[in-house]
Amino acid sequence: MLWLALQFPHLAIDTRPGAETQTEPLAISEAQGARRIIIAANAAARVQGVRAGQVLGAAQTLCAELKTATRRSSDEDAAMQSLALWALGYSSLVARHGDDTLLVEIGASRLLFGNERRLLQAIAVDLEGDGLACVAGLAATASAARLFASAGHGRIVRDLADLREHITAIELHHGDLPTDTCDALAGVGVRRYGALLRLPRHELARRFGQVVPDHLDTLLGRRAEVIVPMRIAERFRQRLEWPHAIANSMVLLFPARRLLVAAAHWLVACQRSTTRLRLAFAHEDHPDTVIDLGLGQSSADREHLIAVVRARLERLTLPQGCVALTLELTETQALDAPSRDLFVRHGEAPEDAQQLLDRLQGRLGDTAVERFVVAEDHRPEFCVGATHGSRFFSRPTGTSQEKRFFSRPTGTSQEKRFFSRPTGTSQEKHRDPWVAPTTAMRPMFLLSEPQPVAQWPSFDWRRARLSLPERIESGWWDEADATRDYYRLDQTDGARLWVFRNRQAPHDWFVQGVYA
Image (cartoon, rainbow, N blue to C red):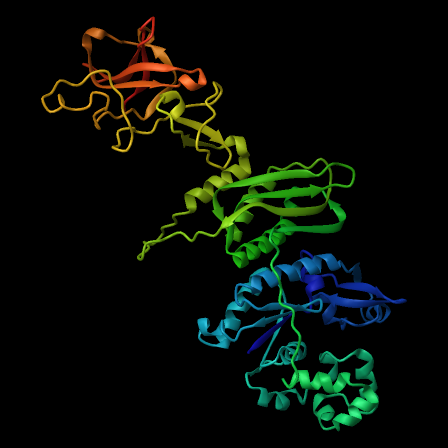
């Protein structure tokens, strides 16, 4: 096995927007007993000597203008959870160690990249895009990999036999030994692993406890280490909190982006995609502001999800400041990788149209984007309708308020046609009179409501010719019975209409659509 340890030493800083790059010195601290200890510091503070592990008073002595903030462990835990999900894209065996370290077994996955260094380059590119500082260690045991990461050891040690040589110069405090044990060993002059390895095992166990020999055996692969692999949750739901309310909706894009990145990692790890997600903005003295976002096509692309949420945030007005944000993937499905052409032309982007619709809907709202849906109904006013939102429905509601603009051509051989009489040709005399000819195509443009022929401008029966008859008898089950004979009507001036005559009294003629 080959273990990769990824340590994130500045996670407490990296989880705060702009903290690492700001010019003012900033340190994150937490209470440990009666003292406050520095957990992480930004670049401006590190330049002046502020380091993790220092007492706050000592850090302020080194940097008088140092600003401090309280550690938010929940943010770091959410970030580590997201990173663990991301790491599952490189290996099926991922485990968390402590507050800031991931263990990834890459013995098999390295073959996909050719060698370990190419794999590390791919990982570095991913982490750089997320703005996270990381140090890595690579060794034949997980314990040694953690040690190398903590010490900044840049070598790759694949063989157990070589581990002893490479750990001799590393200081003990970089390892997993308890702090009091390291202090006791330092009291007798043992500060590095080389000196520790030269001491007799039985004397180490007698003076410092069995923990020291066990630690060395685990480090060198002579003793098995218990590693608990990460388990993926069945559903994705994460929450981020912050101490001060945020009133500007666009500022919320930073925590929203972090949650969406975690959601995308979860989708990839589970081999799923999402069609609907929910954002809940929590307020101090007001009910949560909840936004449901639907996608026209399922997606696991984090950049697309971020673009959709950004478009919605641009038009979001919050009733009061937001103190927490929750993201939940409410609808997911198995990831269906689209089939693509072997040779892709330059500039082709087959999913751009769908992504554009999702972004428009996110910016303008669900009711601003309409989609046409086809129903299994022969009646023209019910066969196609417009629906709001991202999801397609198999059948429109058929209410009078629903808009109807287009109809699907019905001349395919797979659909039934009805007409009033045969055409009279010798070829059709032996045809079933209740099956329409396949040339009977409906127009692409239908009127929202049929209009009487008498009201149609410049209509003259004397200049009209009827053809392509089609009979429709349908709708008796929903009290919208339609018993009609349809024809294509050609006028001598070139106009072409789709008209019908009611077979029930008073047998009036109506215009249903117009041919292009």
